[in-house]
Length: 440
Ligand SMILES: O=C(O)C1=C[C@@H](OP(=O)(O)O)[C@@H](O)[C@H](O)C1
Ligand SMILES: C=C(OP(=O)(O)O)C(=O)O
Image 1 (spheres, rainbow, N blue to C red):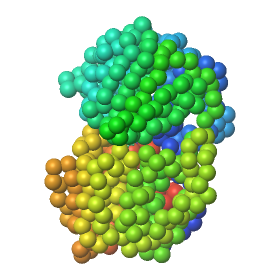
Image 2: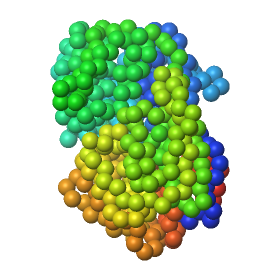
Image 3: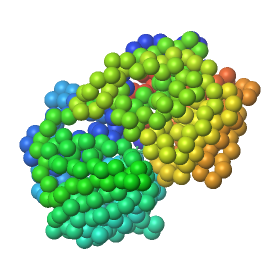
Image 4: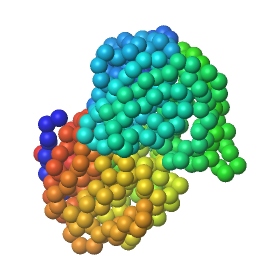
């Protein structure tokens, strides 16, 4: 990817208008994978056509699914749970942790050899969190030092079903284990001490797989399914991604005079921690026209400029807003008073070390921060902000957070590379400009 630097100046007037953000990334990946594992034809509308999801589409094609486009609708002819074919070449998952980890679960129970790699960011991210449990199926994983990609996967025939308690709050690990369970012999169980996004459970049910979810006495969840399972093709409607909506929302809260409506945003309660937090900060964020679309709750979000105050975000809220912390930290930098964001250990293993990169983004632009263990403390508005150069480390969320910072700052913010925004939010700068951001 060619590097795309950008300098962003304060928006001259409030952001105004109605917009729609691209489809949910988590649901888009899953729709392509599950449709490939189903028998019959699945039509997906609203699919995120971002780089990460396009890598998943390429991988599922390489494994034997037929994937075409009919206008805006993606059409997938599936192969069934046990009938994928050996890929002829290395599977390149680009920048996407979700693609690499969920696919590892699928490939563990396919009796052939696959080799997976990714870009420099993905090649630095931990894969042991999936290979440790998945090896218990009988599959063999050979990865680089530290359990990093590239990695070879020798899938197993007659896989053993797993019972696994998640040591980290991760929907990717949960999903990898459940996907392996689809083609194992017997009951697969995942226990999660803290609930993480449940798109895998919801979509498996949508494709006809019985998935039992029980709340445990400690408040966690126990998820069970029985293999071998059969998935039947079912059409999918992908809602707008709340993690993408986060950027225009925070920008509208911070730029005086803003009044923006974002339609069709996914409102699954395991994804909306940021919206709750912004309201606690005094943000004027209203949900209109709440409805169910394609089995997921969606609504239109009206957001107006608001004077924000500092907030304390408890660690148990982290899974419901995990990708939103960099832009939340931007909001905190412009809020009155101190904010304390707790329990951010998982931020260290995203596309970049997002805790360190977020601290650097704020510091270089004059906003004071402190890190105490896994907690980030942002010391709110004091003096003029901006004027810094932000290093994004191949991380789309850092790049978009820096753009939002620049729109609200007193002095222009320069960003080393915005090209990676394509992974999750194609057309981001254009969308912001249509609302009046004036980014050149
Ligand atoms: O399951 C998913 O679709 C995702 C889960 C989260 O990762 P973890 O499971 O690593 O927390 C999130 O950060 C990622 O953007 C998407
Ligand atoms: C962490 C993210 O994605 P992934 O893990 O799929 O790379 C993200 O989109 O912020």
